[in-house]
Length: 337
Image (cartoon, rainbow, N blue to C red; front, side):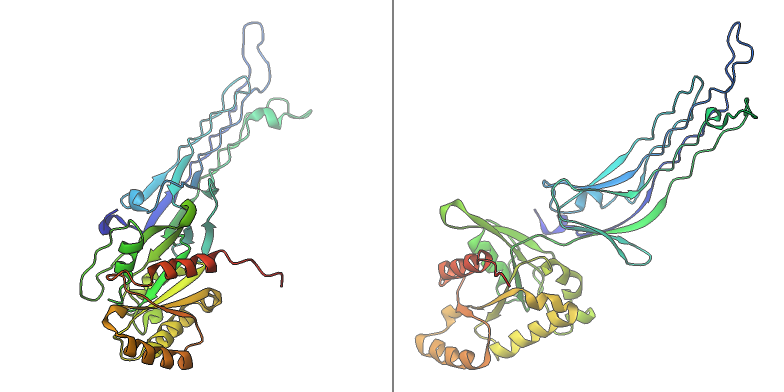
């Protein structure tokens, strides 16, 4: 999937169908001049239903569908015939989609289950026919209920990608390079900041045909939680990752300081992110000789409380150990506390 085809944010106006009106018909047949009321009920209006589709990875197919309308219910007719229901409209979305009220920004629903369905706008109820209003004192009611109006809602669909591991780091930290080496993904790679403008997903092939999914998001900068850079828009994509892999280049001025800046940005954005398992990958370690690596290790042992590994995506160093460590973190037995 090309970067431009990744759409994770869509606004739309949805309208459910109006219910059909009840019938006020009076039975009139040959030899039956006063047969009484036999008006049927109106059909309900069509619903707007959002459902998950495991074959979708993005909201691209909804990018230009800004208005969605369901069908109206048909009116009731004679012989107590109920009108047809309006056509329901299904909106397929990927797993991990969040539905928000555009005006209040309130989360209406998060869709994370396979084949999950949610009625986002209910169709109006059909009106009752005059047959319902017949009584002993009013045997020929000549009135019926009108159908109820449908619902109009402005909603925002946001996609939070579902991945096992989320890559967290500053721009140009080597996240896309790692993704391209350990998965079949083909992210854009270049030697400048914010090369990645959209999240990328890749499937890591592990031993015995086992796999796990890794997500690369645009680089985070200091102040991302307040909306600086691209981080504020894409930080939501790591909310559902069970493990966070912090990537810091070996040539960084202060590796521990960079980790703490990234850690603080996540804490400001959503403190719950800090409960996830964390691992630090020191990237571009092919630039370090044994002496420099030993010196850096000595410093990190003092200043970091999180496990770390030295890797080089280009030189293929430490990648097997990295995959083993991530797999162990993803499949550790749950505690009974």
